[in-house]
Amino acid sequence: MEKYRKLMKNLVDISAMVTQSTNFFAIKDQIVDKMLEVVEPTKACINLFYDNDFEHAYLVCSATLDYIPKVFPPNQKIGTRLNFKKSYPKYIHEAVEQKKIIYIEDIFENPKAVDERELAKMEGYKGRIVFPLILNYNVIGFMTCFLTEEDSLEESDITFISSVVSLISLSIEITFDNEHTKELIDKLRESISNINEITTKLHLNNDVNEFMESLNSQAKKLTKSDEAFIVIDDLNYDYKIFSAMENRLKKKIDFQKILLKIDEYNEDGNYINQAKSIIIDEIEVENYMYYKLKDGNKLLGCILCSNNRHGYTEDDFNILELISKQIVLGMQLYKYNQAETKHKLIANELNILNKQQKLIMNESEMNLSNDKDLYFYHKPATVIGGDFYHAQVINEDKVAYIIADVMGHGIVSNYIVAMIKGCFKTLCYNYQTAAEIMNKLNQILYDEFDKMDVFTTCIVGIIDSKSNTLDISNAGHYCPIIIDNSGKFKCTDDTLCKKNIPLGVLEDINYEQSTISIKDSSMICMYTDGIIEIKNKDKEEFGIERFESFLLKNYMLEKDDFINALKKELGEFVPKHNFDDDILVVCLSNK
Image 1 (cartoon, rainbow, N blue to C red):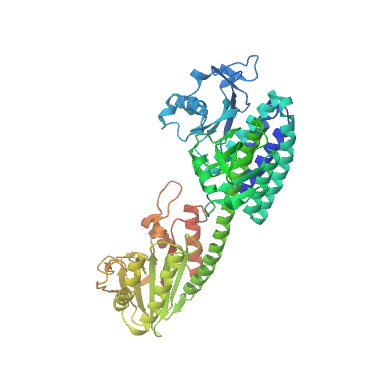
Image 2 (tube, helix red, strand yellow):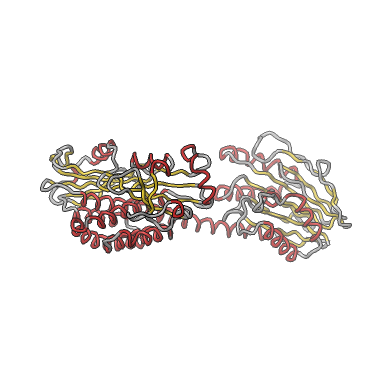
């Protein structure tokens, strides 16, 4: 949301620059600098055509390519003259001829930019976007923005730059025709102040209705229209109308028909005098103008003004275009505000679930008889993880535990975890072996898992401290890593840990169990795939060998020291706060 606020603020600031200056060349670099504060292109260049001469383009921006001034010296006109036909790639000619924005994301792959690749390599840019400067339906120049490998443009950025380009065109008009534009400047100065206030209110109270109605009133007032209205086919409702009318009945207007009609027009906007080509409130309108509200190529709606008293001018149309750009940016800010509010509500719910999950798992840390400790380290990839561990005391000698890796994350996985925990606790009181518990789990949960199209890998274990044995039933999970008292690994392949398919895949399946002696074992480590599949900046996985090496170095540590050492090891391998998958490590230490 901070980005959208900056986009709106900087657009207002640029608008103020334009309306307070009568010399485009004095403020051009300030405009570009202000624009680049909030969007990612590394550089932006403004090119002008003088006297409708399309043979030559004049670079008038100081932040241009390094080599241009050395090759093309300035002449009597402002800027560095270049041969437009020979010096610019084909897609820029296309943007000028068709009066449209063209975005080349990768110059080295797009065939339209094949002649530019050497220059791009030399100057260090990868992408380029072209915005025609249009005044009175004529292209008077264009602006290009250069993007490096790290830069990117979202639709909101393109909308913002397009608005800036409209202001640049207006500034050029002011520069070359001061007398004609004096009244327009006065109007816009008042408008910019009002728009700034309206935008601030939109951010503070998120009232899109007030925002639209205020801009609509501005359009009506500044263009001296009898009526003005905004038709929106977006924002989660159909054909929402914001109207500024005097003595007409709004209910008689077929706004849907108007929007569909305007969508048929090729131009983004236009004004028509003495046309009688549109009917509002059953009355033929003599003079009207419109501007489409677009997010990229998507038509969001339109703003339309009409009157039967006087015709419209280019000044009126320029005002309408500027207001339309403000409307689109306002809609983007509003939708972002709505999304952020929704995300905050979800995040709050997830935080509650996260606390519940931690409480569930914290109960499972315990000291067993014969100097055995059962503890774990858990780091979810999201607020709510899909990895789960729970231990349940059966009697003074036996403890049953379960480790599960649920497919997915978030609320669905939390629901699955809750079901598994509830079933597991009940089954531990009624069944004595790991295999029985696993088979009953699958029978109980299969129907629910099948409906939700989920599954989970799982290990159920029963530790018997008296007999120093561990019974394990494995449903598609990794086998434990066992380190004996001499500091060597004990084999846990299918002979000691028979692996079967995950829970929830097949209804009729028989899970078996293995019995492992833990008398001479210093540590038994159980884990989910998150720890071995995390990747560093070079896309290298942490891997089982690195994990086993860590265990050999640290298995003799006390619980807290072991967990701190594990955090440090993972933090050095992947120096970022969040991992791509949940990490769960459960340890049974035998002192």
